[in-house]
Image 1 (cartoon, rainbow, N blue to C red):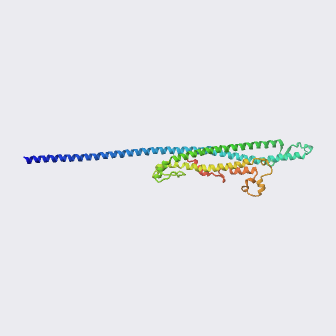
Image 2: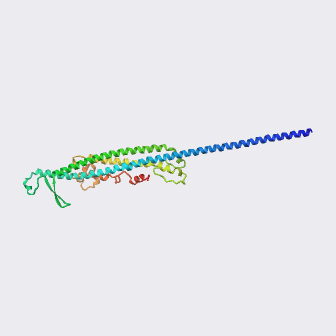
Image 3: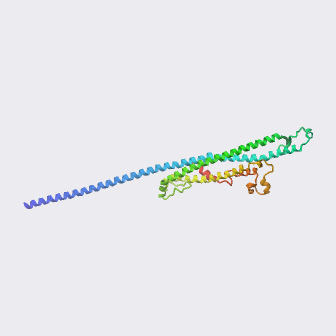
Length: 335
């Protein structure tokens, strides 16, 4: 009986020990499962945070892109509607000044003829038979092959009218250049705004550089398809190149306005007694058969100065500082 009792006790102890060991193993498995679930939740939270951060970055990038285009739209609109318009008006004014100056010597020569006639002090009876007075000159119009009578008062009024119109054109040219300078300063402010915004977008350019694309050095829009690794940044990359285009345009416009200021100074500087001189173009007289473009500015009369400025004023001439094709392409980016 004792042996049987001892056997029952041993079996009970073995069963209790096995149950204790199984319970520890189950607890260990449960802890492992809990640890795995915890890691899964943590990974899911990290992924969710990454998605939210990426979404915020995308929204910020779109906002920055819109800001790029808004600045460039304002910049290009001011060039198209103000700078180029003022430039065209000034070109018309310079042409008008050149035309007026070309007619002034003719009026001066006519008045000189009147003075010479009065100086001769001819007898009134020599012209009375033809019904003319000494204050009139008979001129032939070769175009219409008929004779017309011009009085001294008519020539004086014509010269006075031309001089008044010339002064108005000169005043208009000064005002247009002042307006052009103000418009240029406004364009510089837009460029400064675009440059500052470009510096604020370094974080987005860093995102593009991590994928092997340097957005910050883009001068012209780069075409990138959605299939490329950088496709998600293609639209922003195109907008990020706008400040470079603005800088190129401002460099050309700055050189062009400086060139026009020098031409305008040449026109304004030649206003004097030589303006109504009747001795012809001093440059042509001194240089003889030399080409017109080879004559120095200081050797030219006011008429020739205005004529040369009229030829060189257009922004599309050979002396112009603006690449017309680049300007058209830049202004058509918004179309």
